[in-house]
Image 1: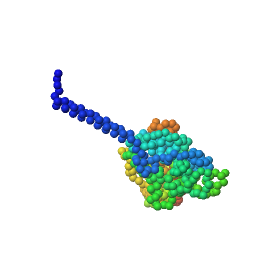
Image 2: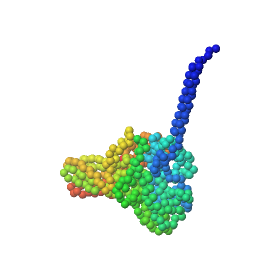
Image 3: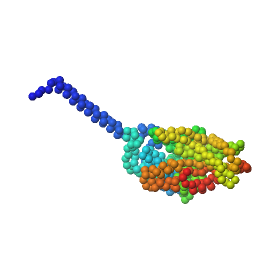
Length: 451
């Protein structure tokens, strides 16, 4: 029989205890890491003070209306409903470009949808929090109040006009005027209605080095110290009854609800409504001067109380000046742009900004010495989507499911990329200038495909 020395036995016991302690430490460490990785962090903690971080809470049915859908609102507010149906807001979810961006693997979809379908009733799930605060790992539960019809409406009426009373827990309508007797509950809060636009249209936020939201329209407007609001231009005033004629309500000051923006609609069929619903270019061609072989064109931001272009940082104006000879042939052509330039790789960064602030000028000076030029043709085109960008989207259409996959594949035929917004012909000899009417330009825009 071999006996183990006491000192050897003690060393073995010490080693065993060390191994056990180390093993327990590993288990504890792994448990802590798993807990931290899986813990639910409130959205408010990750995005403090950000309205766009959460949708508007589920809205109960509205008394005398039913579900707070645009369609139900339109049963009485018929004219407003018809305008809204032709708006960018109504197409916020079905927008082909948005759907292509949303389908990218790098897209934090739930965040993007908070502005494009901003009412919780429009969402299949409720985001209760984020795993370890990671916005790519939302914790979701089924939404019992999901309304698929309302989802398809994009930025629907309730986005601005319906909320839940904190005491009664009933839905009510936010009105801006008062003095009416609607069948549904109403609270007058014009200030809240006017400031609602800023929740989505005034934010610069960096999610990560390649995901940046940059929409500073509200800040640009405030900086002008203008007394105008977003609705002053994008919802022009009109006198009419708020509701259909059969209800015999008085004629009052109302606002159009077409929410017209930069004049590049979401489909070609919407071009016919742009001017009717209030569109006019933000910039005007305020002067053309030709002398000593130099052409000077001055564009002024006359009609916008914010920068132009604004909103989406990839929008820009493309300016073209073409010299024509006696036969109308092109003998001279130059182009330039007004807008922002961004570098998106390896990180998103604004490189330059030539946009025009409200009331300011952009002066374009060119040299031309061709004696054959008899007239100049000037065009300003508002570009929302470059051809090379839509080409990439078409190649990446496999990321989408039907029906958007098929629509993106036909994007150039279905989705307006740009609009001619100014065109002018200047005769050198007579110094006469003839501007093409906006109505004619938009009739031509319907036929333009791609950029």
